[in-house]
Length: 317
Ligand code: KPL
Image 1 (cartoon, protein in one colour):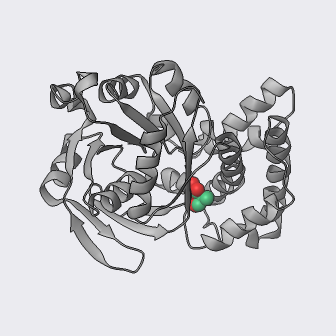
Image 2 (cartoon, rainbow, N blue to C red; image 1 turned 30 degrees about the vertical axis):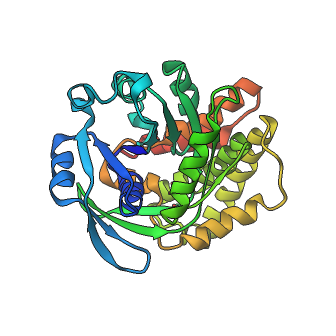
């Protein structure tokens, strides 16, 4: 089965590398020709969890060249073999041109698995791709890109849950195929029909850790070590948890412990938001705390902490 990885960042390269090394037909779609060229010529340099490093050959093209590349490959739906698209780009890259490119890539029997942090993207994708088989995913794998093109380090393991965004738009065979492929590539993958809850649980963790690590320019492990920062974490947690629960998240007694465990398990890590700030890239604040504030407004609940960190993080770059 063909697997298209859209996005050549850390998560995209990690998935592409691990899948390609088990013999899957993987194509990485990048933002620049330069990155695609390097990937085609030199492959993905993958550093595994046990410190091993290897070069893995992959196909790669830039998204901008999609029209030419897919001629004769993606146009005539019925004759095509099934394919999966793993959408690994940041929320901020899900814009008009990308939606058009996804339309081209997803003609035929194709399902799209979306692996973004935050909320808002699934509705946007569903509106732009009304016929697509859309799957929401939540992953806890860690990866870091070590150069601007092809070198990725697998930094942490964790579950990858995915499930259909709409019950009437799924394909049982395709989802089982992907599940088995992911498992044989070493992912701890599972299917779930509780994706909204999973997305909200992950959102809660990101809404507490990401903005504060970015504002204080600190690692995940150091953040709770300072009493005043810990207090802010708790306030952000309580507010976010109440908003998400009001919008249907199952309430749980150990949400706070989970946030603390993530800080501990990823202690040496720089959060994705802090790493965006440090690199001068647009952060995902609009889809994490901004998304929580948006939900709160819809529900008529105040969200002063989420509003404040959204404003502060936007001023960081
Ligand atoms: O998902 C993360 C991120 O950085 O976006 C956490 C859980 C905070 C780990 O760094």
